Image (cartoon, rainbow, N blue to C red; front, top):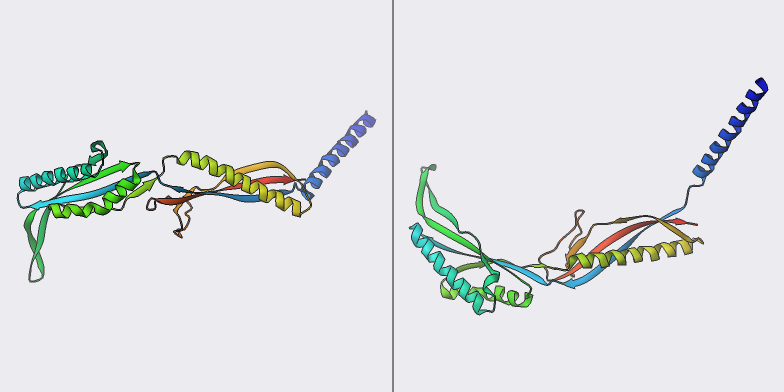
Length: 241
């Protein structure tokens, strides 16, 4: 019985030594990994424009101010449709009312305010895929001043409706770029590129073309420029054999 126990004990020592030896070899010779980052970018032109403007009317009588604003609204709508913008694309937001008051002071101390009137404001918004048309209207909108409308135009915002398809195409480009880099590194080191271990996508960025904008950790999304550049990175890890 003692003889059998000694054999079992010896076998256990041999097996343990085998596994410990393998673990040491694996730790001393870890698998070789190449980590590369590929870039995919694409220039594109926006196909959707969003433009907003605001007009206002002021009067000491609230109803008179509202009547004036409503008259200006009709003038704005008629002007926009005369420029070729469809009526269903013209969206008027709700009216904002502000009571205007001037602060009154006596001997440097605030003693109240003096009512000056009501100011009513309304915003008009247009979304269109006819980018050039809306651009021209946004530049010429000051013509409304000649019609007695106090109109303030905001800079247009530009978007792209096929962004999802563009993103897929850029991921493919970034992945191919990273793979070519990995192959070159392996070739220069006298090795062969093995299996792909992992792939991680970086942040999607949209900047204005030739704008010098900085990238953001959360992803930049430029809406000021009609012509944009989209970019994305892919980090790939390959085995080397």
